[in-house]
Length: 153
Image 1 (cartoon, rainbow, N blue to C red):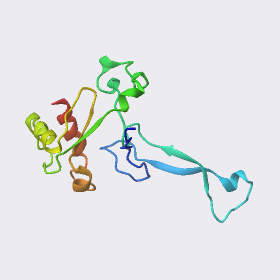
Image 2: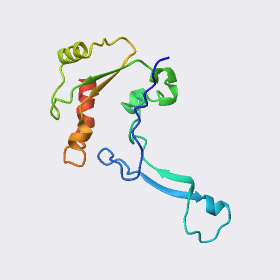
Image 3: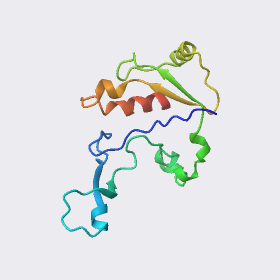
Image 4: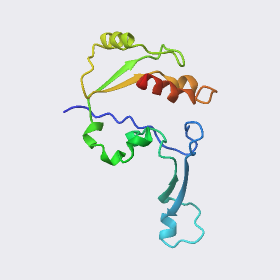
């Protein structure tokens, strides 16, 4: 049986978000003590949290209708779940600098180095180490733009 690897980032209050996207806010909506009718409890243990966040928080998939008006109606619920369970390949580009282009021949070399082949339908992860290198710096918001250029360009 193939190994399934969850690539999701943890969602937490204060986590980094891109540019001016909404900050993550979390609070206890109901506690076990409230449900039990305990007045002024010393401690509130969460039964239900209230979450406020933007749809582009953390690990997510952009539906095609997010890309341009002409794709209206092609929302995430129209994408089959099978699209998200694929063979995965991770290519190491952590040696690259911020906004340094990854050329097609470099992808080929990285595949050879990792002894992998990209097949139709595979998910390819480009590991740039951006989080460790740039979190809480002036370049933090430049990572997504960099990746979009790689994928589109």
